Amino acid sequence: MTKSVDGIAKAVPVTLPAKTVYMGIRWEPWAMQEILDGRLNGLSMGGSARRESGAPR
Image 1 (cartoon, one colour):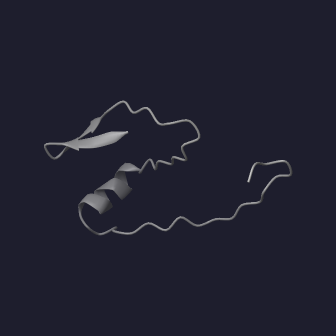
Image 2: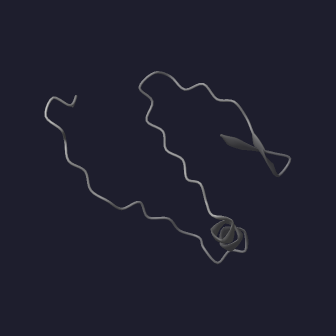
């Protein structure tokens, strides 16, 4: 995980509680530059899912 330290992104170790739902995104360098330049300023997570039989609710 990264955390801003004095305006600089630093990798920091993180321990999450059991069963924590977590997702991260690895941006391609060109996309990260678009974000930093303010040309890309939104993200929409789309998709679909299907519950498998026996999966916890």
